[in-house]
Length: 445
Length: 162
Image 1 (cartoon, each protein chain N blue to C red):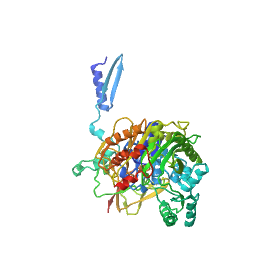
Image 2 (spheres, rainbow over the protein chains, first blue to last red; image 1 turned 60 degrees about the horizontal axis):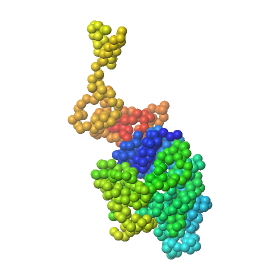
Image 3 (spheres, chains in turn blue, orange; image 1 turned 90 degrees about the horizontal axis):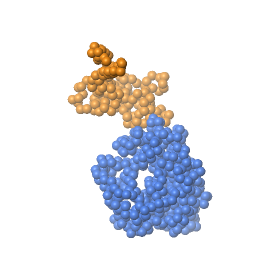
Image 4 (cartoon, rainbow over the protein chains, first blue to last red; image 1 turned 135 degrees about the horizontal axis):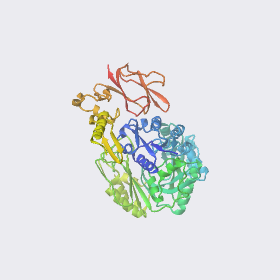
């Protein structure tokens, strides 16, 4: 059993976790940096502890301080949210060793999925489709060229320790590949301390479609349908929706079965997401995110499930509340409202001088904003998530326009105008999406 | 029924002893005499040491500094912070005055300390972090109790620099 949850995070997700704990009757402990003293998660939690200075490496990423805060507050469980320490297998291990309950997947599953080349090999062994590529890290430049020629250009080099686009290079031919090989290795070495790279067939304009899974460690591993997350800028998702306009029931079953197989391959427990690239009617495993994700609310909307509450149930040793894959109802779209210039995309910290929320049916706002809040420059620029729900995609889009146009945030620049422009794009309205969708905005400026 | 004499006696007992009140019942009649509630000043002395109000008082501008501190409250906390150097906790954890429960505390109020001298321990994840003085002078205040939890940046000691 668990009774008091320490939330090792900040911002909107910390609030979301507090909300779930409150519903579950669990006490909450917020941890915060000096820059977040006036943050909403600090005000809303039952208890708050300052764990370090503004910079995250000394506060939100400092394992010793987070654990010490759990010890002095008497918390018996830790929820990592997303980002920060959420996918740090070592942290998950330490939490367990300290006698605390980790509200997340087993450290071993985090580790296996964290190494991209291992993850790819592990799921492929279970019959999950992967892009053609090198099964092992590449030994030399010439080996890379050899593999690339056998699968056909273009190819993409990726760091096995991967993430955030670092150590990634696209090559259209052998000459480009030879040139990119050393750079990618060097970049990976610098970013992750490990220079291993592998390569895969590069899809020029795929869709990004992912499947939400939940496993209770008691025999139930359930897929909660897919999310379309193709609208991205620099590998950062901007708009997510469920279901995907490109997926029919038959394909959905196939993708969900593949996601469940991937999760089972690493004895997964808790919430996770299996990401696929989708091109020309086929899907390929990309990676598994071993955490609750930013875009989980669209899945909650179309499945009628509270995924955070399910996570808490699982951590407390209870089974999942659903037996099989839930039926999807209606359509949900999430818009990430970042504090940034909608044209230049430059971050825009500052004080919130005006704040009005949209009203009406089918709108959910997850946010840590309040009037007078000072958005610190130190962290992620996500201010709020606007999640709209309608009977179908058309109604969801209509409600999205209404909600975004009524949402007023003064004092900082936000992505709201950009989202309104996306909603007016014929390709968006028709559901013709790919990871290149945002290119049009970059070239127009 | 109670006689007038008896009622006077009851009132005298309540006012002289300072009890909160007395209630007497006899042959179906009941009488109650309540004591006078304590004076407001006495209530003001009740807040625990180092309550948030006390910190607020310590930060009041100079003219207020002349008001004598209530006897029950810790006199040093009411003094101004002016000219003092504060040693704050560089880590969240548990504050210990001594290296082990049997040992003497590292420092006491009034001790002269030099820069670099160990003042206390803050334990985090079973790691004993020795906290050193970052200024030389006299220890004039110690904020946490032994074995108390401290946050990052919380005041541990005040040193009057020499």
